[in-house]
Image 1 (cartoon, helix red, strand yellow):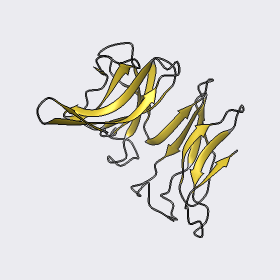
Image 2 (cartoon, helix red, strand yellow):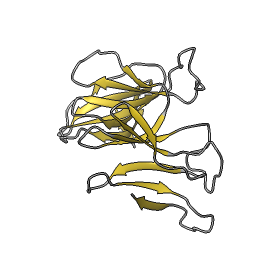
Image 3 (cartoon, one colour):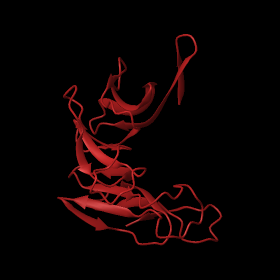
Image 4 (cartoon, helix red, strand yellow):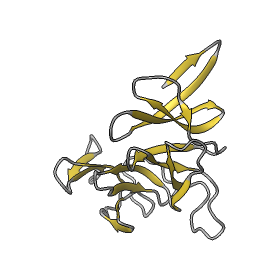
Length: 193
């Protein structure tokens, strides 16, 4: 989404994420140079900047009404097994201005969905494969994972892209996008488990 402000100033806004109570929206914007995260009241008003890194940040989901989960392309720690281009996952308290982000996971998340119990479904990122590449079959494709009470569990093992999980209405149910066959003209199917 591109918005014009003033004379010729154009900035980008993307990746909107609502708080669980629907009162605020976090989004990424390059309005101050780098891709930072801002938050705004859902009824409008002035957006407040939450992150200030020179790397790009993208909101993923709210863990609760005040804690935002986001991905950032910051340089990983020296001992990390991740390549610098993959990024890491952080949280920030949106009610505390100027609070530094806290590392949540030293690995990247592509997308995330949080249920009312705080369980997190997410898409991993193992390599630099194009997220939207059709019919990809490799060890670098995405899988769906569950983060629950400090434990990680891989939920999909298909040798193609499984991505963008969301919690379903029934307890424990969820949906995700997958591409199980090369004959699938539409290319992606949605599964419920």
